[in-house]
View 1 (spheres, rainbow, N blue to C red):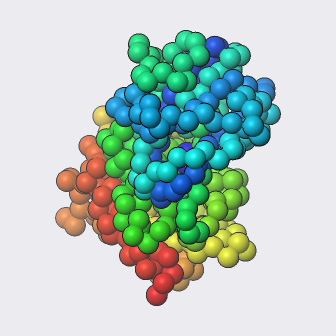
View 2: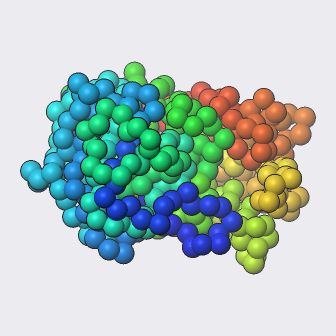
Length: 382
């Protein structure tokens, strides 16, 4: 899955990396499955669109390198038997099932033909994958030669896999540290990706509902956590557990370039917000696992985005983490802070686990996070 988010207004501190519109173009995007199965459905999103979105044709295939596909696995996507579908503003479309047996962790390519002018009103900014765009209808092309490349995901929001036995799922609800900023693009090295590899022997899917810039209490580079729980968490088939790693941006954004006018967030407000997530999980009979907030001293230092860290924000992080660890209100706790912090300087990431910006882990850090999760506690089996 890739959680949709609204496109921000011009002048925001980060570029959107989007064209003004698609018109008569083919768009090909790659995603990795978590569990394998015999049939797939593709989920397309127009949830932040202001106009109907017309898909003129769509296809699914196993991905090869870059924009290439394996032609032997190429299959048409249909919607109620038709090759085209009109998705209303705010809506989703789910394809008919496609007969294509794929193993766990297979990478697939979804190609969409957009015959009419279509403004990308919604997208997923932290895709860590390349989208390929060419003029014309080329959904069956083995490779999109001369394609324009973009680092965001557009319209494609999920893949549904039919398994031989009902599969359970774990959803990771978080911000850029869950979305994988700092990981190698196109290499599936975010911590939910590594968790997916660990969960294969148990027949459990790991789904990433991270949005870079997400906040718990207020909208950020996506809507606030409470506003997207129903869509991004509770709607997931077979949902067993949700891991919550949120609050870093609530603490870090105020007074910095992302939210210069926002007041500092007291720890109790974050704790009360987390309690609301716990209450909603209880109401849905879903296991909820709290993750401690990771160190960020020196975050983005020397860049135009500097201002994320202060001693006061560090004191607030420590207070929230103490509550996550000791309150007993979550069903279980994952101590990502302990896994990632520098023992000699606990407010900072360990150097060998840092991507280099002192906020996001790198590949080694994300692997350490995933490998530090007790799978039995995650799934409630002890």
